[in-house]
Image (tube, rainbow, N blue to C red):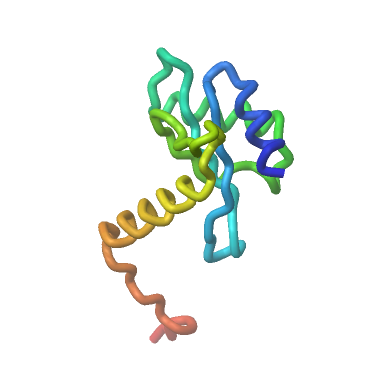
Length: 117
């Protein structure tokens, strides 16, 4: 089903090409993430993201919607010019590790409700 999502993304006027992978998610176990190469003059940003999300909501079942999007200049290719999914997965793992290292530490949640006095 990743190829179905890629085909839908690639039909968008915003998208030159895309690659969809599954990434770890604490709540769901895994989630859909799309790596997107935008058409020539389209710039990544909040407006582009909103348009792409809106387009996807009209084309893709809710459970299959990408939960994350990453804009990149080009997709890595194998020697036979196919999208290199392993390279994308490796790149994503490195990106997640980098972001986790840069994120502020999470505050521990208190156990149970606080008693009022």
